[in-house]
Image 1: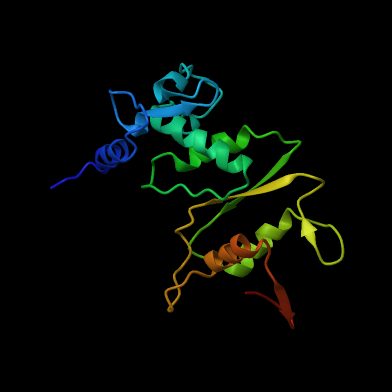
Image 2: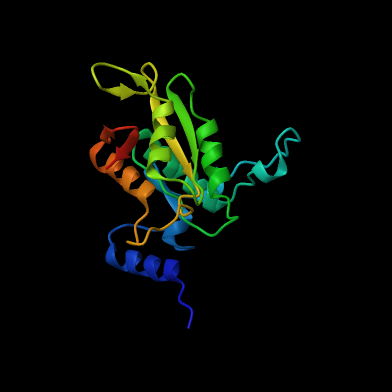
Length: 196
């Protein structure tokens, strides 16, 4: 038996928040709250008219739908608040294209973007080297993005690195440390770099 979880959630939401006057058509996923007039407005109103640009490769073209408009809306909010974003979905669903579109729209005076493609052989040492490549020395032993820019790492194919015999993925551990603590530690022993 297949369950439409969006419909079930929408029914629950409308039942739970009876004091909110919700439009009678569609589900809660079909509307957003317009900040100016404080009303529910359909996402379909935000879909731009499609114009094919022959300069862009076909695999990089985005034909916007209500789903891509919703995702872009939340991407904009999360990036502005400096929150990490992870898009999850099957191969070929446009996650990388959608993220690329968002990142290319950022003001280069305010943001620097470093693309970090993962593959089966990506290790935490390799990842750390790539992450540090776009940093510059600030003061003491601190490093940061160039100038006053904010640095965004775009990690593509996050599921690709090898899972070790303990069931862990070393590059994910380094990313987790950075997300939890805002930095990572490096110790050198002889000629090797170890990140933990």
